[in-house]
Length: 101
Image 1 (cartoon, rainbow, N blue to C red):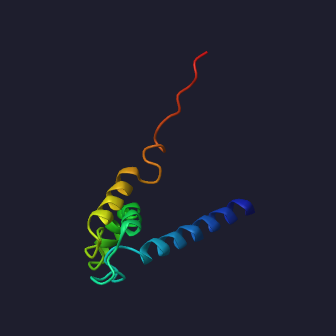
Image 2: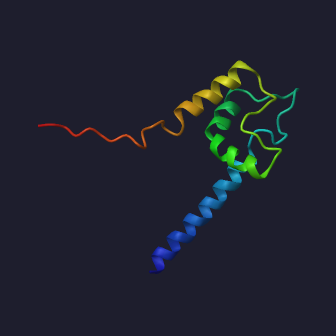
Image 3: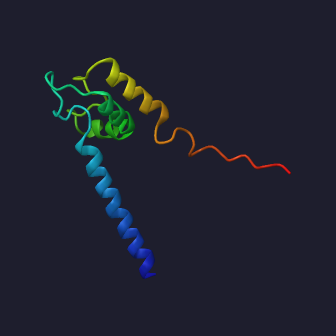
């Protein structure tokens, strides 16, 4: 029993840390400006965390899922590439084919 409770506490702490890390770098947080726009890698990151940003934007009106101060094509490319691919694409839901003998 003790090991099970310890694992649950560690999992809860990890989830809290992940929420804080993800919410610290959401689009529209003021870190990007006209002089320092978001680029390709910001676009990739914002695409990956778009579902979290969407949920956060329900409670915080200054948060959005898309950074308005961006470099244009390269930000868009990174954002949409991350949205389409996700964290490994659809590989989480795909079943491995069984080899026939």
